[in-house]
Structures are given as structure tokens and as C-alpha cells.
Length: 243
Image (cartoon, rainbow, N blue to C red):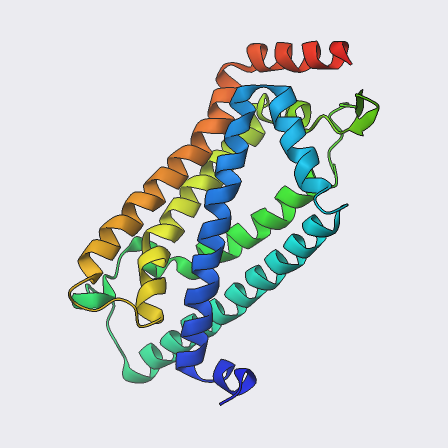
């Protein structure tokens, strides 16, 4: 069975959804870890961003971005197909919603996976447009550091989250991410056949813990910048004056 044939089967789609989901969880962990450099100040964060943008003369970032696009689209497509199959089966069998018990672990998180996924995908598009392409001008100019032009991404992030509207939006979306991972992280292992009755309880607990940690981490950063915006802005201004 080739990849194209497998992708058309119910099991194949679940495998794709599970595998791409786990890979995206790995990306989210790395993304949050890098974002915590915001707390180390503008120089550390901007140097980190510059390193990523110019890895292998820019080729590294391009390859990573293409890979992420493939992952996001594959996960969205396979996730929708899995949801659609379940929806059609439910209509066909006239199933009554309720606690499915056992491995299904039906919850608010599981029953809203499609909608949280759609909103998260839309958020990713906006997030990239806002911080990579600068669709909203914050007035932060590039600076010359040791003869190298460097974007003040730190200042862009700080100016964005100093505004209550953007902080509120990001907090809501990150809580939604936590809900998505609450069900998605453990069910990915189940979809790939890696969770049996012996290991599923442990996998579920670890997945729930991870969902909480990631959601809290992503909520903490914009909230901290908003609450201590004067401090973060002062750090950004000092950095700009230095160069």
C-alpha cells in the first residue's frame, strides 16, 4: 500500500492526523521555549530571531517554514476527514451524544476539536502575518548591530502586547490551544496504535499536564508584557538607543 492509498483509508488518515499532531506539539514546545527569551531582554531575543532567520544563509528557515506548512495543512486535512467520518457515522447510526466511556474520553475538548482546530489554523496565519510580515506597523525600525542589520522583533512583540486588545485575543487563543491539546495530545498516540490499556492512563495524564503547561506558558508571556509594559518598553528603547 502506497502513501496515497493509505491517505484515503480511515486508518491512514488517523495515522497522518496523529503523527502530524505530535510533530506540531514538538514545534509548539520549541516555539514557547524560544519565546521565553523575551524575558532575557531585547538583545537575547533579537539575536535568537536573527539566528533563526539566517540559519544556513536563510535556507534553514525556508526549509523549516515549508515543513511547517506541510504539517499544518496535512494535520488540518486529516483531522477534518477523521471528524467527518465520525460525524457521518453518528448520523447514520442515530447516536445520542453522551459520555462514551472507555477510551473515547468524550469531553468538551474532544467534541470541539474541529472548531478549535479551525480557529487555531486561522490564528497561525494571522500570527505569521503580524510578526513575520509586519502587517501592523508598530514603528519599530531595524537596527545595526556590529555592522549587521537586525530587526527589533522584541520591540514589535512588546508594542503588540502592551495593547489590551491583542493581549486578550492571544490569551483566549492560547487557552483554546490548551483545550485542543488536552484531547489531541493523548489521542494522537491512540490513533497511531501506541496507546494500549496499560499505558493509556499514563499517556493521558502526561498529555493533560503538557496541555496545561503549554497553555499557561503561552498565556504568561503576553500577560507579563502587558502588566509590566513600562519595563519592557524601557528595555526596548534602551536597546534602540544603544544602536
